Image (cartoon, one colour):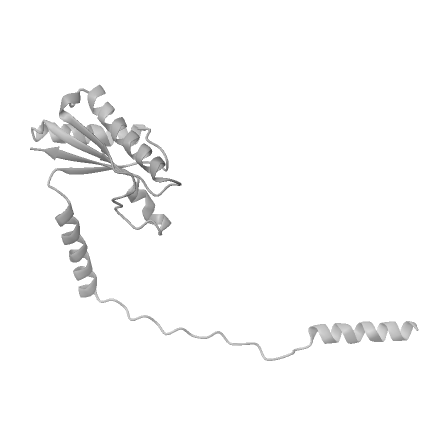
Length: 167
């Protein structure tokens, strides 16, 4: 009986580790043609032209953390430089547009976008860069995305405030 058990054990081990078929070779995917330097330059020029059409001359963008409207030290430094630049250009009136990435509801998107715009306006007032009467604030929610929301790496471009000068 002991010999039968050993024999069955050996057969089962042999069966488990035996080669059932030849291993499948990985299929080679055809290589994509490499872009030439000329194609890359054309694409960059096209992107720049598209951005230039949508952007006025005195246009600044500040980015925020997800679902945040708080101004940290880094953002404060950027806003200070923007404010000083606008003052150097003798800009007296600005429009601040708040934007957000997609959230659970449009109400949340509009709320965070407006809070971001108000936070920037408050910073400019606190630093005495602009008077409250010379700042227009608008929250646009996620209706005007800068980048596609499906790409997680591009979403930060939608969590922004745009600062436009009014002449």
